[in-house]
Image (cartoon, rainbow, N blue to C red; front, side, top):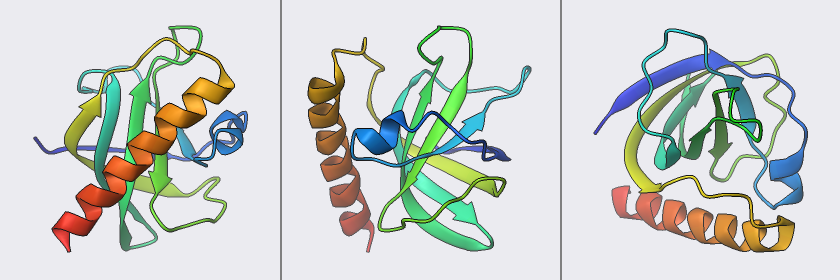
Length: 123
């Protein structure tokens, strides 16, 4: 599966950073075709440079705000207001109800481990 999604990065609440996985937050506009909600591995392009990425597509905590959260593997910089193009490759898992910060941090650490293994296998 390969699907491309794009958008401009908006300032988020900082929750993903607190959980050990800083992300660029992109609101998904109405009318845009998206895959199933979930956590994916893929690639993201910022300023003409492609990076391996962990990408989460969810409906937020309210269930009404479709958004994409992109973590660039090995990159730590503020991407606010940048345009990001993402190519989704493989789905890792479905979205789960938020179990609490400590448990979610452990789940995200596992997601990151899988994403790094996926990226290593591609090189």
